[in-house]
Length: 265
Image (cartoon, rainbow, N blue to C red; front, side, top):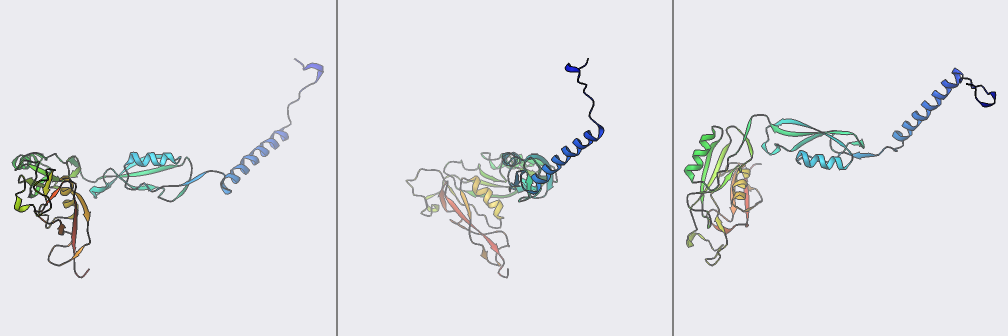
């Protein structure tokens, strides 16, 4: 059918279509150049999420408008299990909003199992449970006074229950000797003080990490003090605690732990 008025609509010449294509392409290209070269596309620096759990790190990155992928990476450091150990691109890199950041989460290079809960068991029961795992082994067994844990039962353990550890990991135990006799109170807890109390176990020769786990499991706050220069104690092991061994303190008290370092270091 012919248009009204007898006007005939002829198709656009080929050169006109080509010209239109060139113009549109030029506009799009100019837009890309302008947005990238002159900062019209929003950018953000990749934040530092190392040490966070994958879920916390993902939430943090997504709040900045970034996409997240998670990859596992083998590590021999148990403290890094389940935690972010690196990102790609790395921290501080400027990327466009909407870019993908790969979060690398540490996992054991060897098979792991969760440490069993031994707190509240008798010493024999705890040692039997460790042996039954066929995976963990007994390490040091220490004794401490406790106003609430019956004599002969486990007050604390290290590593803590539920922590994934490799085969052969050694488990330390602190066994209760019952309430502290008056002669052992050391003046830190009065006879009238009925609040929960424990005594400091002998941590000599232990690592700072191992000692911290045991003290924390006893409800104490651990603070690392100034290292002690000495050749009488193995470097890296506990040289001293304040309060000292066998002194009785209230649960929630702070224990300052000092680590030995060689005199020639």
